[in-house]
Image (cartoon, rainbow, N blue to C red):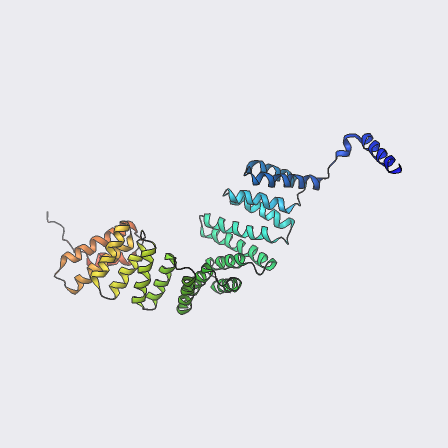
Length: 339
């Protein structure tokens, strides 16, 4: 009986209190908005979810997960500057949360890709590095953070730091083709050619279907003077990406250096079949024609064909000062007509 009396008294107190008893603390109200936003996100109702999240941070500006969720929506929509601000708020309100720091780093990388000036690109990359360094301190064994940090350092020209964090990423996941490929590029940029070849081949062992990596490997072989292995690699790249002219352009250069002019011309012509506007292919084909003309000055038709290809290459890409000099050197000097 006392228990029933207690309930009655409690009910009486609630009734007397009236609507004021429904008061919700700001933090609880913020959490309610956040929970509702997640339900809306599950239904892909992004505008409504964003409104709930905005209400959540108004109710409790220290709710880090709400700031981060706002950043996620903006980043998904490609609004990287808005995403940056929200992630920064999330990091400020909870400096020990790993995920907002990681996402902020990714956002800075996206801003760097969209930037129009070198200064802005470098500023964004430096900001990404700063954030990723904190993220990797919070989660040292996170593969993506180490790999992204390495990529940022590489773009900033800090190859030793890029190598350090890429090696750390490989230690975390040694079976990542991308990490081994990235490390190969880093070694290549430091002129560590044998190390680069090793990493490229390791990446290919993990995933053979990588035509862009094959181009990198072939180019490294060329720098080593290993032209026949380079041709084999470029041939594989052409098979994997039959619509790309790049492998044929590279094969043409290899055959030219081997003094196999017919195969060089065949490769360059194949490149032009795939891309009529390839300045590299027109240039290379002109070089083959001119090399044969130099060997036999009587064949002026070869000289004319070379000049035709070179002029076309310059029309497509005028930023070839060395080619401009060659055109001037080999162009016939016509005397002006007498009046």
